[in-house]
Image: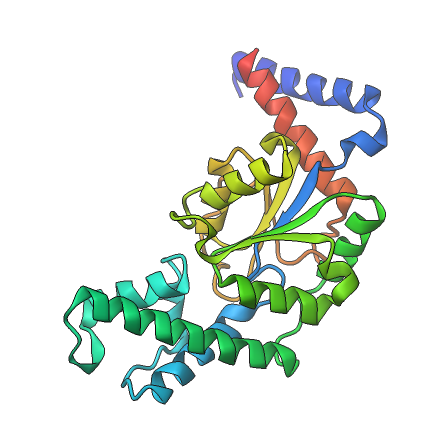
Length: 275
C-alpha cells in the first residue's frame, strides 16, 4: 500500500474512531430498518412464487413451466408482471395473443391468480421466515427503530406475508412500499426514494437488508447503506457494492448495533471522501 493510500485509510479510521467516541450509543442505531421481502424476510422465490406462477399458467391452459434454473435467470427482471412480459416477449406469447392490450390483460389476470395462490401457500405455513428476521424485528421494535419493507412484489402478497408470519402486533409497526407504487422497479432506486420521502428519513442514516444484485443497486442508488443476506438464488451474484454480506442474519450475528456500525462507517467514509 502506498503512502497516499495509507494516509487515506488512516484518515477514515480516525474519523470513525472520533465519531464513535463522542456519539451516544442510542444515536448510533439506524434511523430506520428497511427490508426487501422475497429472499430476505423469507426465501420465497424458488418454493413460493415460482410454483404459484406455474399453477396459474396451468389453470389458464398455458403450456409454460418455469423450472428452478430458468426462474433464477428470470429474476434478473424485477416484478412478476414485468417478468412474464419479458419472458414471452423473448420466446413468444401463449394462446396466440398478439395485441398489446390483450398481453397486458393476460399478464394482469395471471398475476392476480398467482398472488392468490402464493398467499394460500403463506397461510398454509409452507414458507417460513428466514433465520434472524423475527429477532431483528423485535429488537427494532424494542429500540423504537422504524420498520419498512420495500419490494417489487404485489402489496397484498407482501402484507399477507408480514401479517401471517410475524403477527398483527409486529405487522402494525411496518410501513410497506410494494408493487406498482412506483413506476420504475428495482434496480432503479425509486421505491427506496419513496420510502425515504414518506418516512422523512435521511437516506445515508438508514440501513437496507437485501438479497439480490438488483435490490442492492436500488438501495445504493438511493444513497442508503446496504447489508446483503444471500438467498437460494443469489449466492453467486456480485455484491461488491454492499457494505456487508452475510449468509443469514443469524450466521452473521447481525443485530441493531452491527447495523448501526455499518451506517456510521458508511457516513465516515463519505465524510472523509468529501473532505
